[in-house]
Amino acid sequence: MAIVEVKVPQLSESVAEATLLQWKKKAGEAVAVDEILIEIETDKVVLEVPAPSAGVLAEIVVADGATVTADQVIAKIDTEGKASAAAPAATAKAAAPAPAAASAAAPATGGSRSDVAMPAAAKMMADNKLATGSVAGTGRDGRVTKGDVIGALAGGATAKVAAPVPAPAAARAPLAQVAAPVGGADLGDRPEQRVPMSRLRARVAERLLQSQSTNAILTTFNEVNMAPVMEMRKRFQDKFEKEHGVKIGFMSFFVKAAVHALKKYPVINASVDGNDIVYHGYFDIGIAVGSPRGLVVPILRNADQMSFADIEKKIAEYGAKARDGKLGLEELTGGTFSISNGGVFGSMLSTPIINPPQSAILGVHATKDRAVVENGQIVIRPMNYLAMSYDHRIIDGREAVLGLVAMKEALEDPARLLFDI
Picture 1 (cartoon, rainbow, N blue to C red):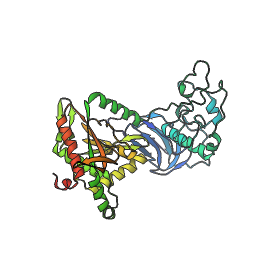
Picture 2: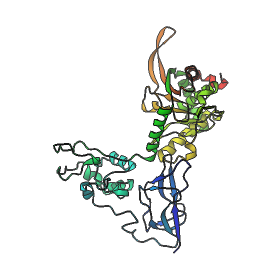
Picture 3: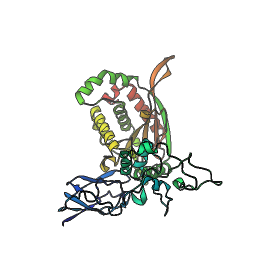
């Protein structure tokens, strides 16, 4: 027997530990070299762990949901073994699922509950209208994993649990470790569920609080007539798509307008380091993207050197990677200025929070037809409200307001971007 260990890959210097998500193979099953065995979630990215050798997965050392560190052994592969007809009923630290009814009725012990679902599993249960406690968990402390939900759905669980029969109050376990109200009121029609934050969500929460507590955040607003940009897009859309294989969107215009303003007012592109102001001679623009795992901000490196087509292609690539959880750490690191587009969700106005260590962020919103006054006449124009939050410690109101005005002027007269005026 020749055993090869499967280890946690190297994590970045700022990441001390990670969480195992779900094993894609069971002990006793055959694996091919470089086949993905499991995904590992850090507070920044999701890493895939491939099989280092072909063979049979002899042992799963660490189960789903466990916390691990770099180079930790999580499984073992027998390179000379043969796959068994059926994988063992129980792998190391991963017990076979118990009947759903037992899981739903069993009380929590040791500060954990058997019906608590991992974030991805909880979302899938909600999407398929699976009741809390209806799926048996095989993860750490009996937590429900995504694989458990998939198995339940394959077995027809949806039809069985869409309308669960309420259990007697005395037999029902309190949901989410919340004690029953005095008087024994039935909580059956007021369910709660407690799920742990993903590492990414916890990290985002930490950074937002850090931003609020360390920056002197102020927001300035302006409105933009988007008619010139819309007219230009309409005029060149077909030729642009045929030439570059991608549609031209609004975001490339916002990126170009932002770079245009940052060149005029370099302090908006700067950051604070102790008592120093660091002026960046490059323009790395972060694009806030919502993903199933939470908010991520991939970076457009050297955006000032990118064409409209380059920007659109890169944003499309980042969007696809964010949906699939494939963004790499290098794609999320750095950035000198960020853009958050709440308009894609219908937001009319918001005050974005600075992404540290940056000193400013642009909030873009939905473009709507509104009544405005031009030359003393009321006319209808497609208007967009821009909001730029900035760190008032180093950016004065003058630079912030003029910087946002420069973005407005570039968008209302896109030819300025060609001549850099």
